[in-house]
Length: 174
Image (cartoon, rainbow, N blue to C red; front, side):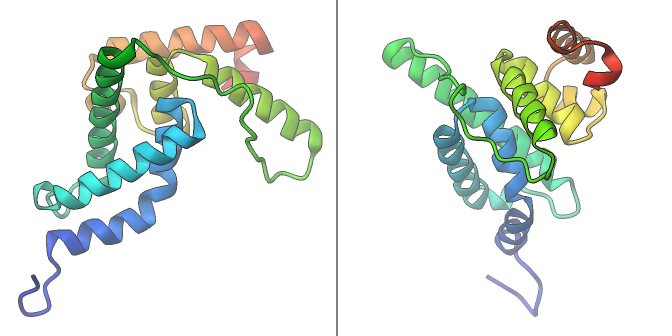
């Protein structure tokens, strides 16, 4: 309900979701490792955000609120799945990840690196995405993931080490 032209929390959340959705979906893909599951998780996160819009404080970081909300949804889904059938993450080996760069060599290497990143354990994938793709500091990522900063550093070090073994020097990996 609007009063004298003021936006409600629901209005703010819906507007923010329109802008934020590509980043949300990318985070969901990093968590799930599967396009169809990431679609489902992103949709569930949007629905939950709209349902809980009154909990969002206008003027705060919408992206952090959404990442945390999404992470909690995913953890709950993993728990439900484990109870149901002991299942885990599905493979992303056959995903067709499109790169818009014209150079086929870069496209091939980018796809190969992304597939290798997606083979990392979920915790490393999510941490790597938040820090290297989304640009969060170690401290901000630790806050979002609700883990100590040392754990963020450890996860990134292990992930980098695995990628360096596969692709060469640190300067080439990031």
